[in-house]
Amino acid sequence: MTGEVAARASKKGIWGWMFFDFAQQPFHTLIITFVFAPYFASKVAANPAQGQEYWGYAAGIGGAIIALTSPVLGAIADATGPRKPWIFLFSIVGFVGCWMLWYALPGAGSLFIPMLGIVLALVGMEYAAVFNNAMMPTLVPRSELGRLSGSAWGLGYIGGLISLVIVLGFLSANPETGKTLFGLSPLFGLDPATYEGDRASGPLTSLWYLIFVLPMFLWTPDVARRAGDVGSAVRRGLSELGETLRSLPSQKSYFSFLISSMFYRDALNALYSFGGIYAAGVLGWPIIKIGIFGILANLTGAIGAWLGGRADQRFGPKPVIVFSIVMLILCCLVIISTTPTQVLFMTVAEPGATSNLPDIVFYLAGALIGAAGGSIQAASRTLLVDQVEADKVTEAFGLYALSGRATSFIAPFAIAFATAWFASEAFGFSTQDAQRLGVTPIILLFAIGWALLPWVNSRDYKPAAA
Image (cartoon, rainbow, N blue to C red; front, side):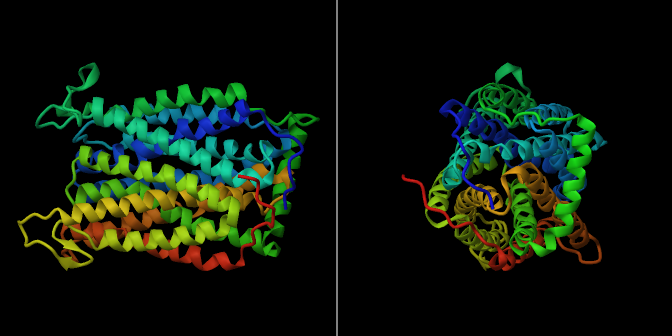
């Protein structure tokens, strides 16, 4: 287990590290969940079911790349020392990938460019987060990691909220009215007819990240470069990784946590990735309505991450994770049982009629998902730190990325295949019902992650003073 760090980083250094989450969250908010993903599914692909299917393929490919390479790079980084050069490298990849999404034209005959952009953005942003997360234990004592992680996630959600308001209020417009959520014409002459406001979420994410990641590079202290030549460091890192992998099955708590988090984080990522697509296809929500849903989820996510960090500090990260998984499973059941005419599988409006109740229920479920998702992600970072020694942190976050991505291609692929299967002529389901049935693997993954948590230990420590 890790011990207390010898020194505390300056407040400026800690804020710089926290601003990484602020810089990166618009990628998850704008691209993965609330703007670009539903736009891709409803306007770029031939139909929403195909859009959900092909989004699953792109996410699966990106996840497979990360799963195959992240532990090796993490071990090499631990052996060589500094993390910032790695963050810089993968930030470039993520920047380019997000910018490419501008070229995802509505009704495009080929999906190659947007799918390539999605893969590059996923790989770049995920890897940058791996190396940024590894800096966390060097900034504050272990007893304060829960609060630090929760505060950083909360700050990240605020970044996602602000960026989403910018897109909905000033860039993305209803093609029928030509007006944004605030009743304005889109800035920069963006054309509502070709959904330039929705596509602008890609370049906006790139520029936002470029600006707000700078405090981390300028203010946050990095690990010193290790002595020796790079070749020796690489060989040492790979050798230590091999030893870690061989010993993992005998480290019951560490191994169980990696496997558990592999499933529940995969389910959470899939829930985020397909939530907006689901709302567009099943409930028929336009981008602006999905965006309002996103504003609510980001607001509750910030609150949930902050409260989860405080609960982590008082009770430890494991109870926070267990409670969050239960909440997320219940929310998934509510969402799958909700259509324009049904709530909890009970009819609330006749076909062709309308009811506001399904929208209200979906909004409430989204708010709870935001809160539970924020707290579970923050607590997972601190529970991982409890499993390893201080000199193995980057390797651990590499394995954490592996465990999070080793099945990350399974959830999107499972959703893609299930959606295509239920949409086939053999079943005769409607596009709406195919989408509903296609996302059911998410619940199973959450349940598996929850079932493995009893074997995971959380370090005993004295809570820091409030």
